[in-house]
Each structure stands twice: as C-alpha cells, then as structure tokens.
Length: 419
View 1 (tube, rainbow, N blue to C red):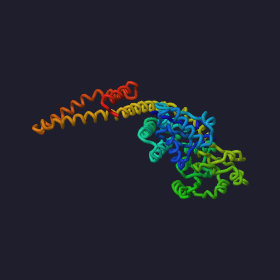
View 2: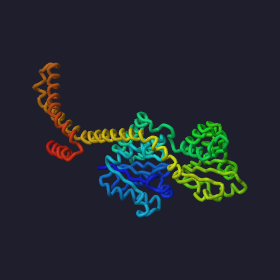
View 3: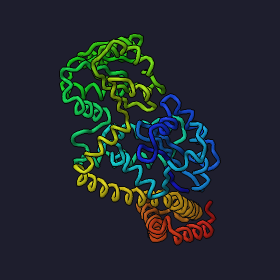
View 4: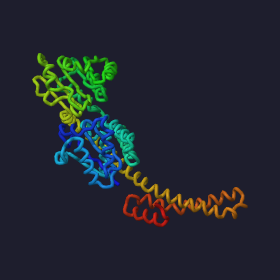
C-alpha cells in the first residue's frame, strides 16, 4: 500500500478556483465519508485551510486513487477534470511524507513559518479519527507530522517575526496605511482567525476596534478580551460607512460584504477604506474593490506581500528542510519495523506454543524435579527458543520493505504455516 497526497494550494491555483474546492469544517465529515467509500481509498484525512485543500490517503493503487480523489474534487466544486487537472499536485510514499512534514513545519505556507498550520493539521487528523476514516497508517503519519512541526519551531528560527496569516494581514494593512493607531478598524469574524487579527491589532497599536460575528456571543467574548466595541451583523452597512479599515475573516462560505451593500454604505462617504479579506471562500465580493475610494486586498495579495520575507528566513528554512529529511528517514525506518512486527510476533507465538506443548507432553517425567530444577528447565527452553528466533527476527526487520524482505516473509509463512 502507498501513502498519497493530492491537492491544490495557493501556489498552484488562482484564488477563484481554490475557493471553489475548499471544504468548510461543517462539511468535512461528509467529505471524509464520501472519499472513504471509494474503491481505492483505504484511509483518508482532508486538510482544508485558507491556503490549501489536500487529501492524504492510504491506497493500494496510486493511479486509481488519483482518479478517485480528482473525481471527488470535481463533484464538490462543479469543475471538470480538464479545468481542475492543471492545478492539482500529487506525491506518493516518501515524497508525500516529506510534503506533509513541510506543511506542518510551515515551509509550504503563504507566510513561511506560520504557526496556525500546525493546529490545522492536528484538527484535520482529529476529525478523520473521530469519523473512523484515519486508522493505523495515517494515525502514525499525522502523529509524527505534529512532532516534526514542533521540532522545526523549537530548533530553528523559522517562526520568528510574522507567524500567522492573521498577523500578516494586520502588518500588510499597517504598511499600506503607515499606522493603525488613529484608524477605526472593523473586524468581521470572531473565530480563530479573528482572535489572531485582534491580538495583532493590539500589537500594532490600534485603539478603535469594533468586532462583529454571526454568533454575537463570540463577538462579545472577543471584544471583552481586547477592550473593543461590538456591533451586530445587521448593522454591517452602517459600520462600513464609518470605519477606515476592515479585516474580514468569517469563514461563512460566501460573501458577507457585497459590492452593492458597500456602495450603499459609502454613498456620502469620502474617506478611503482599506479592506483585507483573509477568508476562503472570500468574505468580500471582488467587485467591491472597484468602488471609488475602496482598496481591497485578499489572500493572493497577502501571499505576494509575505513572499518578501522568504529570503530573510532562507537560512532557517534550510535547517527545517534538514530536519524534515531526518524525520522522513526515521518515519520510514519505523514504518518498516512495524510492517515486520506482526509476522515476527506470529512466528514467536507458534514457537512458544510448540515449547509449551512439549513441556506439557513431558510433564510426568519432570514432576519429580524440585521447583528450582523446573525453573531451570523453563529458563533453558525459553533461552533456546530466543536464540533460535533471534537471527530470523533481525533479518526480517532489516529486510522489511525490500524485495528480499518479501521473499523472506513468504518463506517464513510457508515453512511455519503462518497466515
């Protein structure tokens, strides 16, 4: 069986296409089960973030699994295979393992080194486990990926400075405007991204912040923590008429700020408005950016802005890649050992059963022995068994995953009648 990853991200696809294939948290369980029942998918995890959607799967046939997963993307997005194919990337086995480790380490993010992705990887795995579609193989892979992500951030400086998409959005706004200290800021969305935006705004010196969210209780909780005001989503147009900056991050799955609504809000407004939309699918209709006095930036712009920091972290990125290489090798070695372990265990069980049967057969001839003498017999037979099985066990472990290992495993199964 092979580990495969097939996906689309901010580098391979325009934002317009990426937002069509992205999957919301609410729709994720259904998507996982849709994938898991396909003929060539044995286990599956779906990682869907503002920068990517990737399907990790265990499969016996790579090309058939590729077709299954591509078809899933087409069904969920309404795109044809021809429209989708140029934007898909795929890796298998060690390359797929390395890709996941780089994702967890922040190397493949729009903001290199960002920390949010590690939690997103963990959440994707936990959802797949809860739905029963990630089992032994993917559990081992994703558990290891989280270890790699933590090691990368502990042993290198990859996550210094800007460490999240939400923080980068605020920094980009600050660079465009020069300062946020005298600006009236509206944060639309109080989820995980909204939390990150709020903390970054405080760090940037913003003092006039209003928060709104579809669930008002979450807006109140966030506003209380940052000493901000709260507004209802019903008052969105009136708020748009009085603020200087909007940071949109609701995850609503559709535009919450339309061009028409913004045009109405700005009928008698002459001051400029900056909108930074970091949601996927986007919270703001692209046409809103064509209105007079409105500057609209989205994840595509943020990726371009953040790419300037890549050179500054090149040395740290190289260190992280070294760590990824080491961890891929360790994972593969551990996986191979796990593959050999069941056969070795079976072999030892058969041998132990034979030993016990022989001791039982000769029990009447051993019954006159003292307890100490019987313990000597027990130790002697266990020792002989261990020595006889030591060399075959080592060879099976060392050769596991190779053609020679396959031949040795087949021979052992035939010789000892193992399944």
